[in-house]
Length: 466
Image (cartoon, rainbow, N blue to C red; front, side, top):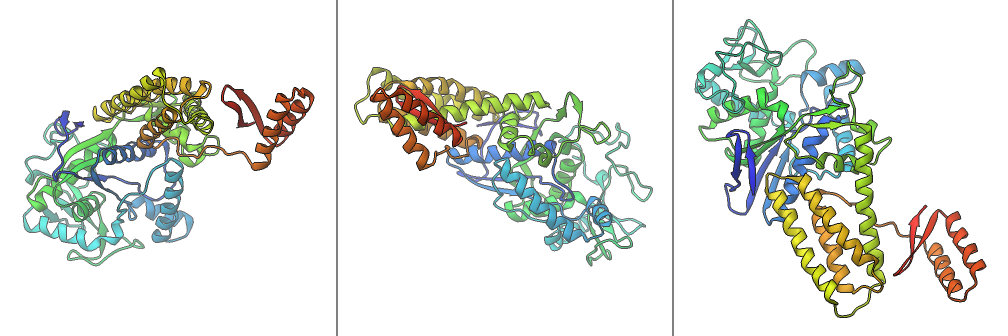
């Protein structure tokens, strides 16, 4: 597999630190609200990365954190008249609701910042002892970016050339505008923990370093996140981690591209700020997953209502193909394969090879989906044949499942009509054989009244939801 490594700005052959095992750290949400469509993209993309690596035989350890102490949580708790822990618990629960709808599997570990205060303090103490951290006059502890000569190599930032920007905390107490808080002194009414520097709480960046090294080791394979996290968050993680441990931090850095809404940057002021929870009121969230995977993860992507409708139509085509194949399989014959069916078995193997080739090329889900649709056209031919061979259809169904499972698609079971509907359909089939077309039409209407339609196919009558 080749991965585009943000650190080196080129595709590199992926070679895990330990053969057969992969450690992945993905930045998770700050749990002060429902997550939005922009958050959903990395959650989906890197869920697929884990699924694909597993399909290739790797043992994957996937860690995704929850930031459960932060200015945003403190402000939300004040707005709602509750506590920071209660806000965190509420929105962690809501995260899992939306993540499940998007087909995102739970991480192997979901560490929380507030559960790792000891590890965070220990790392800051190491940095202070090595001369990389200092306590400011206001009681905060900062990382000294000028003491780390490699600062800026992930993002290409230059401390001497760039002015302090909107994402850099500018404060007179800091030695340099790029210096960032490792520990924040307690302000009135804020949650706080005891530390060598007084009561306070961790800065944002330090939590990911402390938790990733705890669960994946001081050096691990892949660190993931949105492109907006490259600077300063991931840049700061590298600095504090490598200065504390004296070892390389993550070996590969993967970042997904921006998402716009109706060709504009998503923002509350523009009125195009979309929560996944709101989208779920109109669309099944599997449609959102399909939409996200239809573009390469590093490319910018534009969200619109029309594009989601297109994704829904594409997903419906896959479900129709799968369900038709399953229906045909129920009516298939257990017989030797004919020439066309033998060729189809070969096509199953070449389809998987094309799919894997796309995924091995820096997780190219767009081309992988193209390989699936190429295969589906041939699967549809076999499914619509009269009395197809069971062995051919069985492999076709398994091949489709193998590919869509990696992408986390087609997770819903085929709709099975109630027994009463099946009996009416069987009675209609018999009525047609008896040339009692009036009875056949009456039975068709009864099936429709129960919410199903009958589609006559070469393999027999197919039942579908109306």
